Image (cartoon, rainbow, N blue to C red):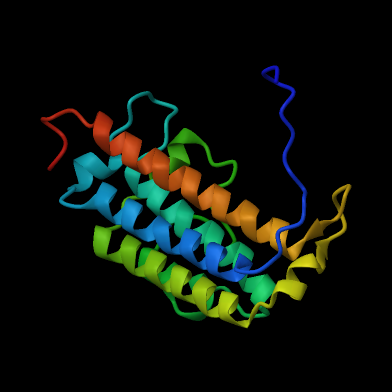
Length: 187
């Protein structure tokens, strides 16, 4: 396959064990982010290899936000960000609807809550996702949830997309942690 010719798969995400696979996948994100944040101080959480890069703190917040913001409407619930007071606890200078998409390097630099707050929100978002997945049956995964795409997006494809986004950002956090200079890693 040539580079650039790859296409996103919109194949069905169903079959025996689909819920278990999704549950396993979402359950893997938190430990990766937790390991990336372990023992970090503010200098490490906000360090960037380039001025336009994201930070460990922003990546951890973004993983939790996108999971919460995208799963809540599927589950028919309010986002934990607002419903459980996470927005107030984080006290970020953004609209409560912000998830990190399209944020500037200057906005990224404003995200630096303590690891326990970041991980608490990620744990809550993941718990909400896992609880929702327990209600999802294989037949539900074929339900169209977004007709603004061609082909329309099914629940299964949306859940895989959310998981993919979370896994990629968790991996970026792990990679970024490995790039931290020794004089910054634990500050």
